[in-house]
Length: 160
Image (cartoon, rainbow, N blue to C red; front, side, top):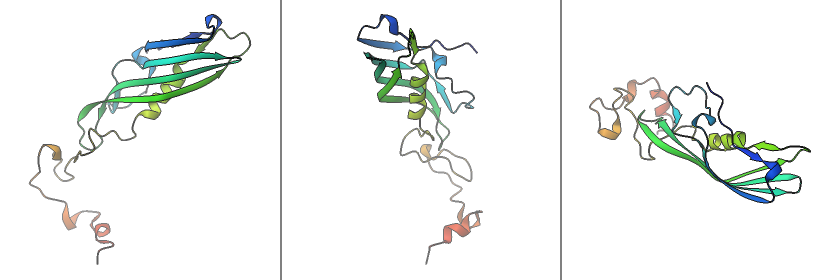
């Protein structure tokens, strides 16, 4: 796997404030093996304001990433945009530091913005636990698992 192209700020030439806008290499997200659950569609997009404040570098803005996800309810594919609209990072400027890589913090912000269990829509009905039919495309004829299911004793708890 190729090394992702980082987003580097040249601190030596930064006078006060700089606006950065663009997209990283698609491999910058580097999620590792996800078994097709979440796959990046392009690179991390960013709109950042970089400001030198004495011996610190303040970075603020927005980062986003389009992804292809597998719905955790119905197993259907859908696109999702993970976004951090209030991205903020503060970097101490070490003596002699000429460059600062913003990529790790942007990557972390995107990963934190991704849902733990992606769902194609809030009204997704998922799959039938008996026959596996996608209930978003219609009901199935097998009915519910009923009283014969392994968890049926728990279903009856709390009922009068």
